[in-house]
Amino acid sequence: MTSHVQLLKPAGCSVVSAMDYYTILALPILISALWYFTANLSRTSHPHFTNKSIVLLIAHPDDEAMFFSPTLLALTAPNSGNHVKILCLSNGNADGLGKTREKELKASGETLGLRSRDDILVLDSPDLVDGMKTVWEVEKIAEVLSQAFSPPQQKGKEQKTTDRPKATIDVLITFDHFGVSSHPNHIALYHGARHWLNELMKGKPGWRYPVELHTLTSISITRKYVSFLDAPMTMALGFLSKLKISRKSERKAGRKQALFVNDMWQWRLGQKAMTGAHQSQMRWFRWGWITFGRYMVVNDLKREL
Image 1 (tube, rainbow, N blue to C red):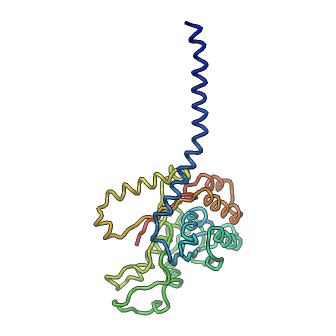
Image 2: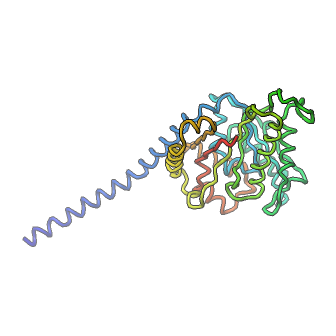
Image 3: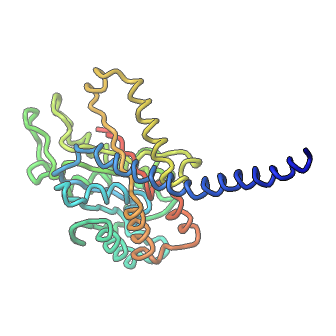
């Protein structure tokens, strides 16, 4: 009996080892399949963003690649019919590399699907200086947006309440009020964008905002470094939030959320925008961000106005 048990024991161990072996082999396949599924599912979830004039409002060169590459790659797809532009309110001259970073942003924008480098505008204003301790005035940001996107007949001219508010763009995308990384320049963009749009609506009761404002959702530090694995979590949270809102109130508010998920090829493009274009910014810690950072793969936008 003893010899019989001893003979069976190695066989059992070999079966367990084989199962572990196949599990290890299957895991990358399952992960890749989940990534592919969520990326393709997200492509069908935003039919609203088609044939639009869209502006991405950022604070510094590299914001477009480090935080918004899924959004840009989705909205610049040839079949979307969109015309996407980038407005960057500083040239990131904190380390004296402003001119270099301007060129890097234009190269990055082309990598991420923009039609032309002419669709990227970078400001170098003493009122909007890059810095963690620099507070940008909301009114200054709103003034820049007004000069760029308010029609000529609305600039400095008193409008009748019966006149429909107008703008030269359809959609404005920027950071939310937490700024994703809590950078004060990012946060200022949110408040500046809202201020500009609210100024457009002054004395215009009953009209809809002429520009949709969508913001990138800030998340906890624990979710920032799980890459594409955060996509199912974001989908689940979005579904649960909808369950808490009645259909009637949701229609009345008109608030929508959009989810953009890069597939593996797009993820590599986003990385290329950093490593190939923003070479002056590729310090050691950014390698961790572009490898594991959730915003390199997943963007969820919330419609604010």
